[in-house]
Image 1: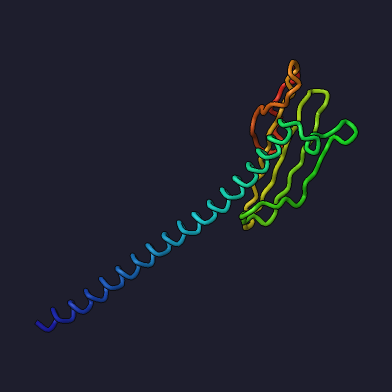
Image 2 (image 1 turned 180 degrees about the horizontal axis):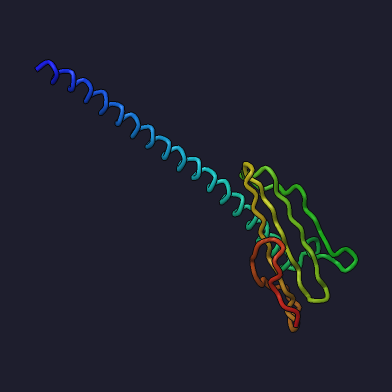
Length: 149
């Protein structure tokens, strides 16, 4: 009978240790998912901010706003400190580049949110019949998404 009392204490200690290990593992997994979720949110916010900048510039170009359409003499326009209302990104930049030989404008916007940077590129082409600028394709920075005719 005395040996059974000792085994009950050992069993209780072992069960307690197993539960402690399981709870610790669950906490570590939950913490990892939480951190990944925060990082994904920050990355998504940077992406949406960069896309918003590209879309806003695209609307200005389509409307014919000369401040956003590069000239042959100055084929690149840079915006280094873009201010957006209610935005959490600490750095927002955009570059508009004209490739006059192909009638193409490439807009590249970059946004950084808590060390997560996203760069979005929009290629616009000029319609040969109407002379209007039209969105061609969104892509990652540096990709060539048009073909010379």
